[in-house]
Image 1: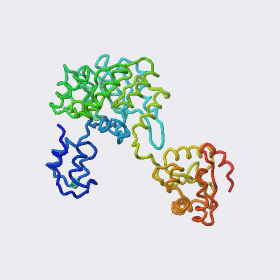
Image 2: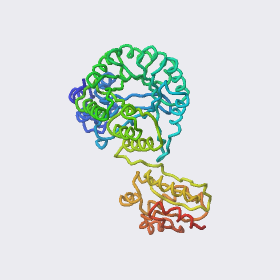
Image 3: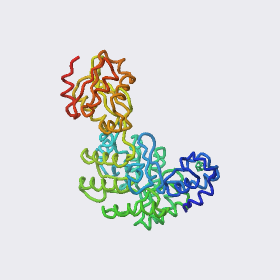
Image 4: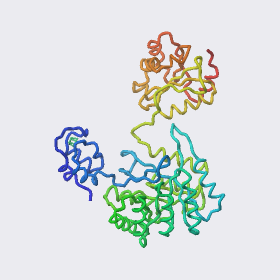
Length: 446
Ligand code: SF4
């Protein structure tokens, strides 16, 4: 049972020191009870109090990890219903279904799609992470499939109704911390024992929310903490509806047996890949912790990865690129120098267009706290004296033999101040639109 603000307050040091950034211990206690603060923000809590408070300070949806290494997937840990209230923390894992009844070529192809569909975007790699291995045929084929999966770096979901086959699969794959699927009303004890023995997260498969919550309670009593909920809904309407009910119950009503991430199976909701993609897109927005798809195509997986990236970024913090000098197309001391802000989108559009031009160039990226050129200029963070000072100190002068710098066309008004800040330099006004950069650079003469 979650503690109230007053109960939490009684366990705090009551010194009102303010180190937690709240004016008083009471204010901090209230924020903790409302899920708006983290217990770690107070460095003075005693060990005993911390133990008692950990329940109150844990996120209402349990955070858990599937897999290990590069493809490890963290899910759950969410604290808000709507992204704009704070942020969503852990993006849903995307899995491809591989069944042991598929022929060898098809199995190979499905494993390879995970490495095939990887995209670089704003300095990040977007990719699906999980293979969901389903036991439909005999045990031998399933075990072969698990052995194959262990040779790949991807995270694994093991799907089997048979506890002894699951045990064998876990024995092989335990180092990869797979997600076990799934504990039903009639076999939850056997699956619970496997989850404990192999220290792996466990999916609970109930026929509806009520049954799922009954099973999570039973498993919690067995000491199982890391669980994922499947309510067995295999229609878009039910999956959407139940994901929302579970999230609201956990966050607003603090119903502990529903405080776990969910898994959804768009692969079982339609035979049409495009419809499946649309369903998955809805479930990314509405709270799925893991989404299992029947297959990936470039045109289906890329929009999902992009949507997931956009929803699971902090809305209060613009994405930024590190300040510095970026060489593009192998520049030398006579190459042009362009300067821009560190809003990720601006950087990637500008650097992409410079790359397209094939003109060797230096791109100087200035820290504008993630603001775009116009916004940064309006906020006084991309003005002539600051940009000039940045050009002087960033080190570009050691890399070039000329003294020319190209500023963005939208920031043409900073030209005068830059000339004052950089005597002896020629300040050139570049194009307003990034799309015109290639044509502009091709005219560069030095
Ligand atoms: S840091 Fe801890 S002791 Fe200090 S005001 Fe915050 S809650 Fe109280």
